[in-house]
Amino acid sequence: MPVLTLAYRCCDRMLPRYIKHSEVEGIAMLARQQLVDANTDAISLSVLRDIGGLKINGIQFELWVDTDHAVNDEQGNPVLGVCEFDPAASLDATVLSVSPVSETASEELVLSTFAHELGHAIFDAPSWIAAAAKGPGLFDDPTELARKAYRTTTRDAEHLAKPPVALELEPRTARNSELDRSIHFAELRANEFMGSLLVPRQQLCRAVEELAPKHGVTIHRSPSLDPEVPGTTLRLTADGDIGFFDMECLQKALAKRFGVHRRFIQVRMERYGLLASGAGIA
Image (cartoon, rainbow, N blue to C red; front, side, top):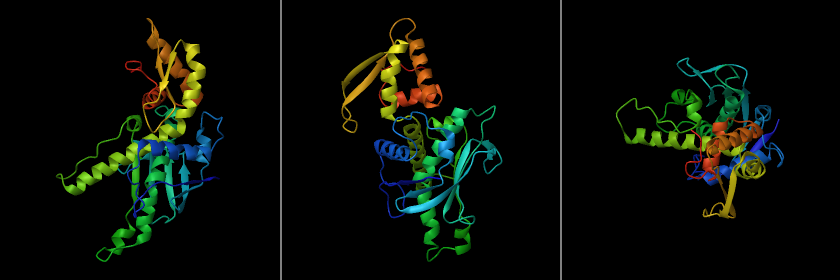
């Protein structure tokens, strides 16, 4: 079972430090290179499920995976998946649980959920483990610290499309504001990792070059204006009375190729600047 070895900028508490989307994209690419060869487009759930552990910024821990049982949140409500660390269970293992394929969760959704939770394991779990290993401070109650567990929860498909807003259970304070920002950026990172791992920029552009002409979609090439993505950029248009249908058919073909939902492909096309204004399908 493979152990993914990755590194990124972090603070002394092992929290990611000012990591941009482009850096998350690069980390996802490094993870992908350790899982499949360069010619593989679709990463299967079995490949991800086989990951046995992670070594992140020098912190190595096991990854306990469960994709066979339905997952519930703390209130007993069904959810798509969770990533959690409980020092009472193990100080060097993170649990990644994803509800199996069912009437309400397609194979593509389960795959996306797993990749999202894997992003949390990579970017959030190291700080959880470091905090548990550090032990109590001078004024901390050791018994309280020992019971502190960490969890991220993917409640539904919408969670994978945009970052959630943290619930305010008490009046606004500086602590609450910091927690909101922490949750916001953690979800952004996990979603960007998910998208870049399952549908990388280079592979998507390569597939677009091959499939777009077959579906009546025109490719426009121009120099990239993004200094972080040098070279040539692609922009797609589908003209005519059924242009929207041609674009949708292309997205469906790409989705099948990468093993994800068509909406997933649309989001990645938008993220990589492939879609001209108005070219996306709602």
